[in-house]
Amino acid sequence: MNMKEEEKKESKYSTFVVHTAKYKTLLTKSFMERKSWEPENTNIIKAIIPGNINKIMIKKGDVVKVGDRLLVLEAMKMYNQILSPVNGKIKSIKVKEGEIVAKNAILVELE
Image (cartoon, rainbow, N blue to C red):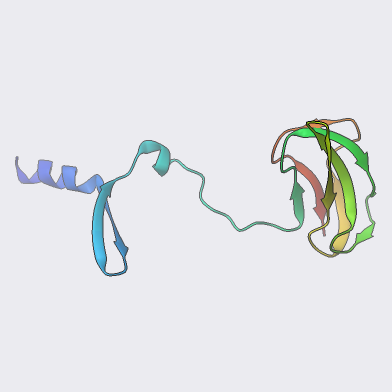
């Protein structure tokens, strides 16, 4: 192998350090294309599971406290109460009663 081929082969490897030990590894395509981590925005409430919006207990402009019931999400014959994780004011409600939502769908936004 000549020097250019060696450098090209070497550039495919990534080096990472754990404590003081260095490791070289090949990263998969799916790993390289993954969505990067973002801190959770507590003002956006998402569906934790897919289901049906059974009841909405709030309206735009309402002031809510931690633990207040916002809506009921029905999934697999279970009624999941979605509670407010923070104190705030309802900025918008993204769903309607009877609507079927997917996992991670935005339900409510708080200010």
